[in-house]
Picture 1 (cartoon, rainbow, N blue to C red):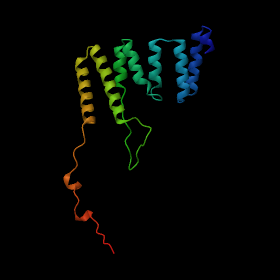
Picture 2 (cartoon, one colour):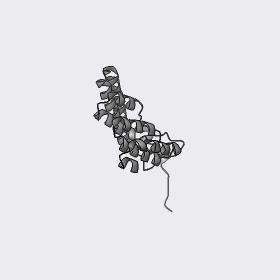
Picture 3 (cartoon, rainbow, N blue to C red):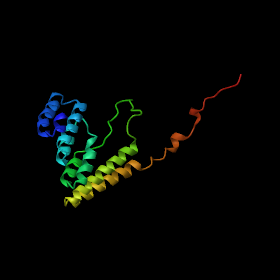
Length: 171
C-alpha cells in the first residue's frame, strides 16, 4: 500500500503477486491482493481479471462483475461471465437437511433470473438474438416451474379409515 501511496504502483505489482503466490488458496489474502491491485490499477480490465482469478475461492463476485461489465459496455465479458455462472444448491444425502443460513428458494430463483436477464442482454447486444431468446425462454420455464403450486394431495391418503383409529375404552 505504501508504494501505491507514494505514486509507485508499478513497483507494488510484483509484491502483490508474491502475496498471491505464497497463499493461493487463502481467500482473505486473495481479497487483499485484489484490493491492492485495484488501487494500483483501477481499470475495468484489472477488476474483471481479479474477479475471474478469484472465482474458485470467492464465486460471489461473479454477478457483481457481470454488472460492472454491463455498465462498461463490455458485452463479450457479460456473455463470458454469464455462461460461466450457475446458481445451484447442493444435493442432500440421506436424511441430512440444511437448516438456516442458506438463501431462500425465492432468492435463488430471483438470482437465476437476474443472471439470465443480464446474459440475454449481453447476447442480444452482441448480435446473438437466437441465444438471447433461448436464454430468456429457459429462465422463464425455470421460474414457472419453481413457482407453480404443488399438486393437490391424493384424497385416498388423506381419508381416515378404521386402521387409523385406535379404540380406547373407559374403565
